[in-house]
Each structure stands twice: as C-alpha cells, then as structure tokens.
Image (cartoon, rainbow, N blue to C red; front, side, top):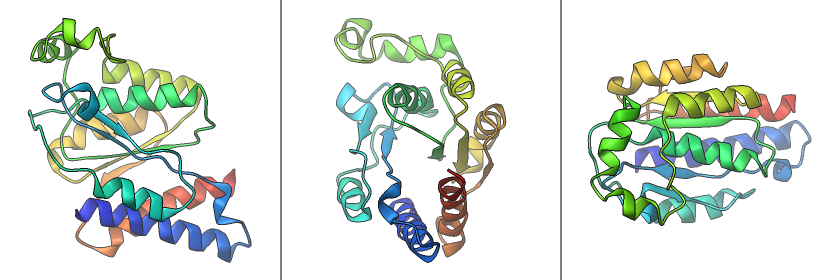
Length: 196
C-alpha cells in the first residue's frame, strides 16, 4: 500500500512540474505492470494497466492489486519481458523497476519454477517461451531504454544494481515510508520527460 501511494504521489508531482514548465501534463503516459512468480497463474504473474495520462486511472488500477504468491525470488524477467514487448509498439523512454526481491537467479531455476504449473500450462499462455532477466536486460539495453531499479528491501539490491548499470539506469533504495521516495521517482521521471 505504501508503494502504491509513493508511485501515485510521483505521478501527481511529475504532472505539476510539467505544468510549471508550461508543458501539457498529458504529453507523457505511464503504464503500471506488476509481476509475481511462477506459482501464480498467467493472469496474476503479470498484471498490466492501460497506458494512462491521468493519475486517477492508474490509482484505480492499483487498488485492484494485492500482494500474493511469494516464492522467494520473483519473476523480474516477466516484467522486463513485458517492457520489451511494449517497446515494439510504444515509444518507451525509461522503465522504473520497483521490487523487494531479486530476480529468478538462473535460467535453470526459471525452468524449474515453471514446473510448478507445468510446461503444458505455460504453453497455452503468452509466456510459453521461458526467458531470463539478463536476456531481457540486454534487449532493453540494445533498444537504449534505461531501467531505473529501486529496491525496497536490501535482498534485491545486487540484482537491481546490475540491471540499472547494464542499461545506463540508476539504482537506489526506495524509502516508501517518507516523501523522499516519491521525490526520487519524480526527479527521474520528469528529467527524462523534459529532455524528451
């Protein structure tokens, strides 16, 4: 819930900064994507909002999201895979990754975890092809899309720093208990929008 509030505050502040700079706040859109792990079915391992220019619609989407699953490391690769899929159709200038757990550590571990529901299950979904976070990071890097990776738990720090460094993004802890967290996100988002 605190993370939802922080992200909502960031969107409000980014819009206000654009207005202060005499820009239409509708010149940028955000999409929220929530990933989990392979003990979640395809409708829960990735949940995605529409692209939105208004914070109210994103808040409405976020009210439907609940923490669930939980299986140690999470399928960060699914979230990054989604960003690459979207980049084929949308002009994406940055990805902001927020999480409390590291990525699934190896390709073999991805395959092992997919066995929870079985390959027959995954073959009938858009996730039929297994992927690995390092492969998705390389694709984002080739596209020139930085991933700014914020960890709310030190357990995720190492992977998130690697992801950010590889894509020329920034990485830092995200304090969801203070206004400082929203401020860090706001600065990143608005800096990129103003540059664009």
